[in-house]
Image (cartoon, rainbow, N blue to C red; front, side, top):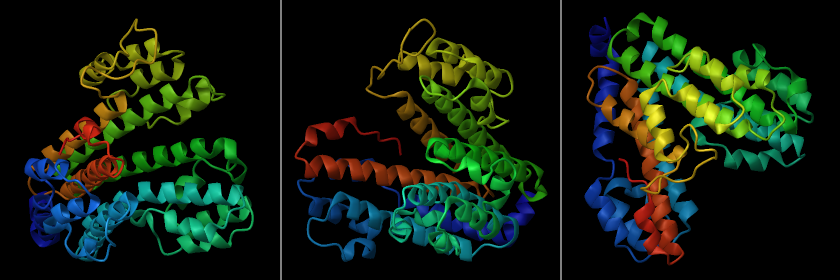
Length: 360
């Protein structure tokens, strides 16, 4: 079924993305970047990959301006894919933007709570999370107005309706709101992938694995970050996506965890997660939050590295729009890598470059 489906429309989209994949920076590119002395040198090295998107930058631009233009290229290429897509593929690409929409709406909620000029916050919104009615959020004078606008005029309305009230939108709850929306989004996306007959096959296999990993990572991080806060165990459990390798037994154990040892025990049934915790000193009996592994990587670094490995593996499959998801993740990591190198150069601390995560 899926092979036939992709011969019609998505095979063309997939072919475009595989071309995008070839434009990602390689080991030699990174080696050349580490030899740069100025940001202009970095621009020159990025020329073949980013071309016109860097042309209008002033001499020795800020690292944020450089990262912004790199992101502009990613957004431009993604929007081209959207315009080439129809049917289930178009809906799949729409789902890829919902996480960025959640971050943008959370930013607007925060701005409203602090009575900031929300029109200025629009400039800080992630372009992949832009939707037509996002500027209308600037018209909200109260948090209740904003909540009503979100419910009526944004693609996130179903995620609000199912579990949030306007009284939940206060400064203390903003991270709970964000995590609740992500939970609802991930569960919806997972259900979409696993119930759509167009995606039976490589797409379902690849995306199910990726979304399960993301659900588990969020559950682990929510638990670790909840220690020492007022978040109750009951409320914490409500934030865990109800799928993944840890669900349900591991999720239940996480919900009852009171310290790092209990978290390590909860994830120990999944060998790769146990290996992550062991590597950074968060194994059972460590008695603390650990730090860096022997190679200088934190738990979050290891999660990122796993995400990149999974993304690269998606490109070994054929006939699947999952390559779009993988390409976005790889491209975002590329932007982080280049930004880190540029910041080290700008601060005359090139010796720090060797510590950046090159997992592409």
